[in-house]
Image (cartoon, rainbow, N blue to C red; front, side):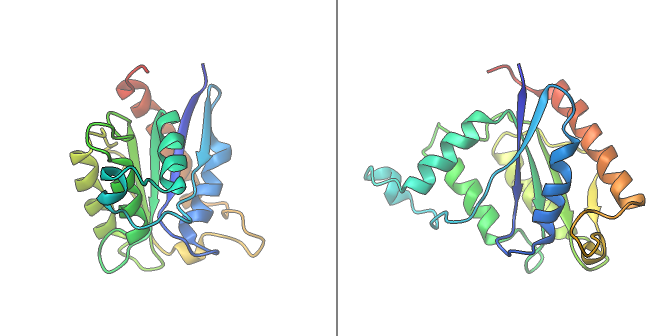
Length: 187
């Protein structure tokens, strides 16, 4: 049976480096796997009243159902103010509720952070990992994936340039599949 790995890009910007990295990862899915980019566009800000009063927005329902179908998750995140972008944190909150029905529980995860700068979103990477520990997601430790100079990774027509970073991303995806295979819980 095919395993579905959801890819969440933590940016809404049309020309987001995270979205471009996610698109570059999709064709790297090995046989028996499907990588699927899951959009965070249109998710209302989480409000527990929606769940408490049975007024759950349609965007939450669709997102939660989509995430229930995936077997693992790759998070591709930029860094906003030394932390995780609000849209990604919001998605984590939406998926973790209502209490006891988290879509994240026990799904093997990987964090790929990126930035035009040299620090490569180190802060966002580690803040995201803190949340994933609480959400009971085993997170790949090695290789750590920090992608610096993200603005230089793509050619003018859009694809990821050939070179060391592309090779590293391919190796990181291979490592994630091995991590997934060791840590996945049968549905």
